[in-house]
Length: 246
Image (cartoon, rainbow, N blue to C red; front, top):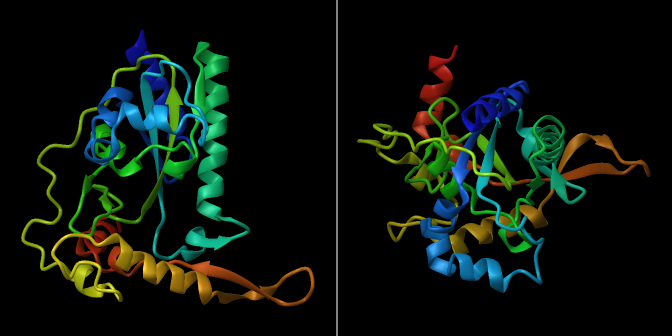
């Protein structure tokens, strides 16, 4: 019965163009590398008052992946506190919560993107659910979309059979890593990813918004934040994925 629910749920997710969904086990997610670094279950307890509380005894996590193609940069433009791509994922998450309750009587909860607000570590969860692997650019690499995707999650109270991680998928094998050379802040100069360096560029992006060719309600140029995506766009697997799909 639960296998059939997963089949129906994934089919419901993929009714939306450019969206994929897979299931991860909550216990596995809380045992993933990012959570181990901060305490797993203890982290959940410590943040219970500061963040959105998770459904009690929730067992499954639906991971949603949305394709962010290079020809649609506006999906990633930040304005009014969010991006249009993330707004769309938020809407889909809430619709799926309603669908699970209405069709199967299952309680679910759309989680925020930010971990500090009650979200999950999405890259770890996506790897467990079989949506991709972490590349040398520190991004999730999807078998079809490469690094051009964004993630959200829906917490599910019932236990649903999780999808398996991908096997024999190594997109960075023998790659010269142009992604690391593309970083304007040299976030990979020490070999691994250096988050503080990356954040310097993001703060620069925030301070230097761009005009997008339209005006706001007061007649002034409408400004958005265009986040740095150089490592994402430099990924050779992204280019290969796009060429193979045309």
